[in-house]
Amino acid sequence: EEVPVSAGGPQASAVAVALLVFRLELYVMAPLCFFTFIAIRKNSYFREELEITTSFLQFLGTVFFIGPEFMTQCPNLHPFGKPVCIIDTFSPYDLLYFWFAVGANVVWLYVPIHRMVAAALASRHRKIVASGKNKRN
Image 1 (cartoon, rainbow, N blue to C red):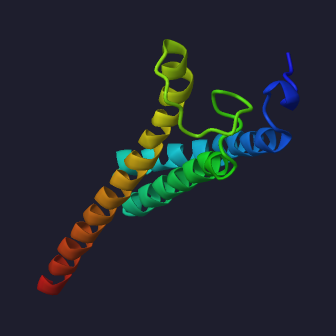
Image 2 (cartoon, rainbow, N blue to C red):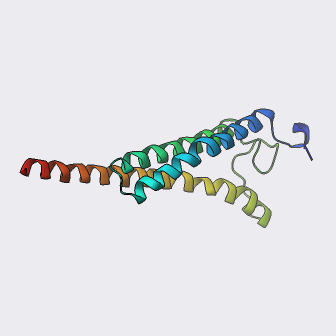
Image 3 (cartoon, rainbow, N blue to C red):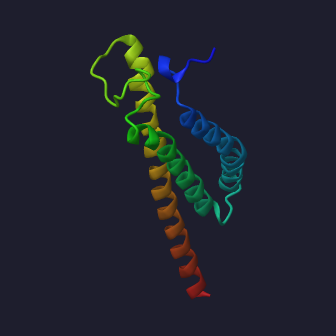
């Protein structure tokens, strides 16, 4: 059942952004994650670069997904329809629908940054080792 904006339902622009993000996840990120997995599993030469690309797009997607909410005073987060980005109540409902929903996005910011740094360091190390072997030959 659709909830109108006047009754606290989501705004049309938020629905459009969500649909765009969902389609990008399905048609771009899912295959990219799969190819990254295969590259890591097969120890491909470009595995770190592919991991950095995938992680960066995941980070960027999270920013684009949650960023507009915070720029428009969070009308599509609990409590719906109220211009509030931080709530000060801790009922079980609030914990589930606000603190967990917003807090879960921190994972999608932290993990990609961690993986980008780890992949960049691994790539640098691998290239230093490879250049050392080439100098000996």
